[in-house]
Every structure is written in structure tokens, then in C-alpha cells.
Image 1 (tube, protein in one colour):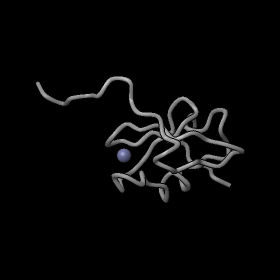
Image 2 (cartoon, rainbow, N blue to C red; image 1 turned 90 degrees about the vertical axis):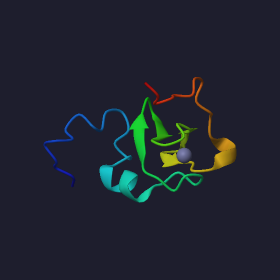
Image 3 (cartoon, protein in one colour; image 1 turned 60 degrees about the horizontal axis):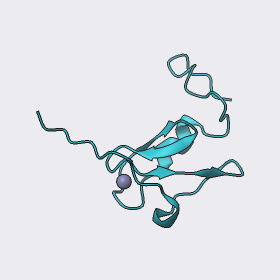
Image 4 (cartoon, helix red, strand yellow; image 1 turned 180 degrees about the vertical axis):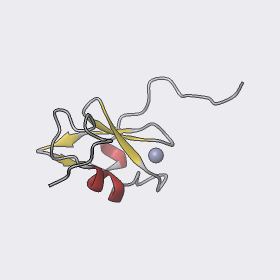
Amino acid sequence: MLACNACDNFIESFPMITKELLDILACPLCKTDVRLEGGRIVCITCGRRYPIRDEIPVMLIDEAELPEEPEKTHG
Ligand SMILES: [Zn+2]
């Protein structure tokens, strides 16, 4: 269905997580975009990691893992 050459390696072991799905998903806290990383949905802003259960992203703040090391874009 999706045949995007640019994101050929985008979907690895999570074929149910499509770019279209990521486009409509957003961090419930930041309301910003998320990306697929290491089998989890990661908020690009706060870095919270949302699990994927039964092929469905769980976009709940309570279920999210906080980033181990807060990234500071200073310097
Ligand atoms: Zn966030």
C-alpha cells in the first residue's frame, strides 16, 4: 500500500506503524510530532517513549517512559 522509496528502511519490524500513522499521532503532552525509534513511539519534543502494544501505539502519558537523560540543546 505504501510505496515510498525515501522511507524504504523506515518500517523494519513494525509494519503496522506507517508514516501516515505517525503523521496523525502526537505526543499528548506536547502536541508535537512523534517518531518511531527502537520499537517505540518517541516524542520529538520531550523524548517520552510510548510503548506499542498489540500493534497499537499507546499514547498515554501514564504509560510513557521518561527519557533517561534529558537532552539540552545548549552549546
Ligand atoms: Zn512530548
